[in-house]
Length: 236
Image (cartoon, rainbow, N blue to C red; front, top):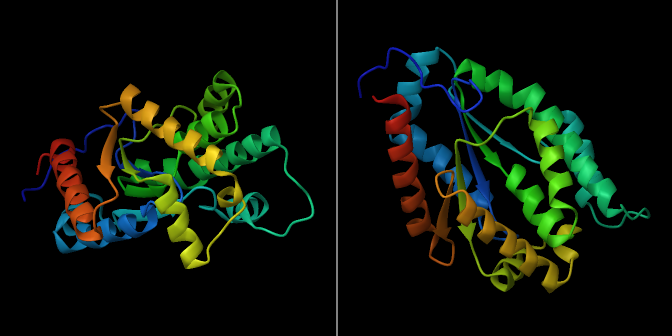
């Protein structure tokens, strides 16, 4: 691949790119995100990008929990066994606080350096979980997302579309149940509906992947999509 003379500019003026993984519980987001990170190295993209910015060009992060403050908020939001029940609007505000810190401390500074960031969940999760799942006001959520991100959007969102029952069964088998996964089945179906509606509304940004397939096929499809996008963005 030939070097590029100038990086493409993203939707908020950043030089790097934000690739987000979304989906219901147990859809395989984290697994596929890490597989993509490894593939970026094996395929030569990491070396190519490193030559452009003279720094480590790929970063992995998550929401909630991508910063030190976020780790504390993640414990409050997701750990089981707490005596205090978090009210739904308070939950929404805590996720917004986590995102604000994440964007300002980690995402924007690294995007400005030219880093490609792989992020486990972002704004679409708030719309799906707190909007569709909890039934909170969508206009309020949109306002909070805009405040928290200061206009930052993903350059690509990979939505791993999996049947809710299959995903929850996976999580229970793994023994990794969080407070969110303890919600009733109807809640998770509403969350899935949220992701479905978001994908319809934002087809250029959100790419649907059938997560009912085996991991290898899923990984290959993601790699193909990301390779095409990287080629468009950086014109190697």
